[in-house]
Figure 1 (cartoon, rainbow, N blue to C red):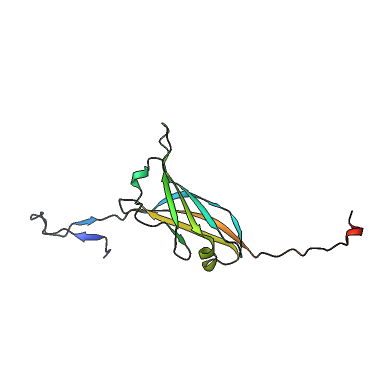
Figure 2 (cartoon, rainbow, N blue to C red):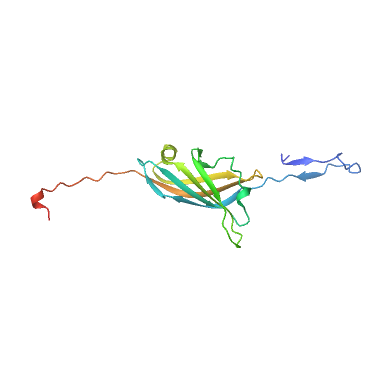
Length: 154
């Protein structure tokens, strides 16, 4: 039997001899648009990765559970800080979330090359939202300087 379906026989239905089943739904997470900057980082860089999550129309700033951390996967890296913003105007666009992640923590759990990342958070209603994007990790190759004697330089 499906764990989300519960029998109702004998509960407020005394005339029903066979069990009546009621489906309890589990809300699917809300997909958002995710923009990551920078889109490519060198494996030896320090600093921040900035993420901007654009929530769907109708989602308001106060709908976001700001006590729940934003998490980057793979690696389950929590955002160092994030801000929830709301657009002003009549167009009913959704809220925006800007989050900052430590590059060194991200580099520990990502491999060089293309990485599919996902950032997830939670609404106050306990429903989750997520966004997916790609992040490229490059191996920093140092350029060799070519030394030219001063008299020969043009």
